[in-house]
Image 1 (spheres, rainbow, N blue to C red):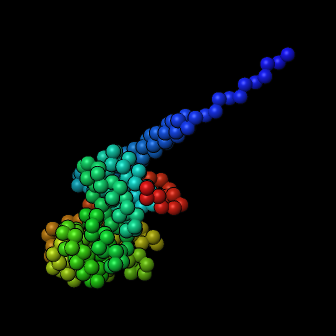
Image 2: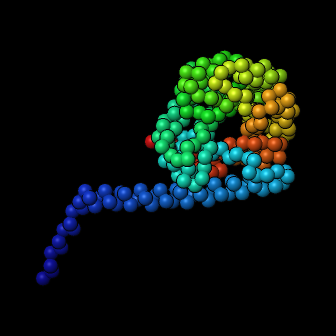
Image 3: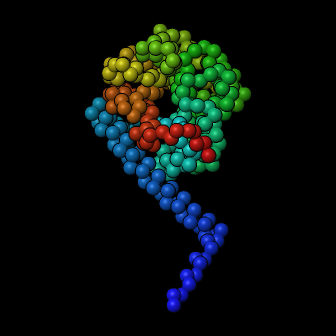
Length: 263
């Protein structure tokens, strides 16, 4: 005669919650290890590129671009030593900046996307540097917003290297005028230039056109030392051309998730 099977004990809510917590910890540790490995590889690329250009790698700031990734990734990156974070959409950026406000040391937030003037009041509350200043109306909006927020915004003039519509950027000849407008606004500082290499030409050639624009700006505004150029695929060319800040996303965080995750 066979012994009837006893039903398995019903899993308690505490058991389920414990399992979920353990799985969350394991996923977090796996993600942290993934980010640590890729961050180390990018830092090595920066050091190698600086060495090849005869530069000191400590003079190059890595901005980790976390657009579309959750605030939890920002916290993990902060634990790995990241201090400069880039975002290109105000809604995501403001939520993540608020979620990470208690981190110590504090993060520096870089707004790197095209910016509508009506978003300036929000951006002025959390951004330390705006990389995409390309028109007089935006200078005016940022100046007013910075004064109201009682903050100092460092502004980079985005320079168009190919005059293509849709990517933003001022014509190189417009840079001196924009710089003068920025310098004349309380709450704003002329910090330098930013550019994106056009996809249809070698990055080295594009960044070479940025150098004289930067040198002219430095002659008129000696504090405008920042050159923000170079991303995951072309940071070496940017560093060779003199970039002081590189903006790297996918080489560190991987392929982007299909939808924003601002939690």
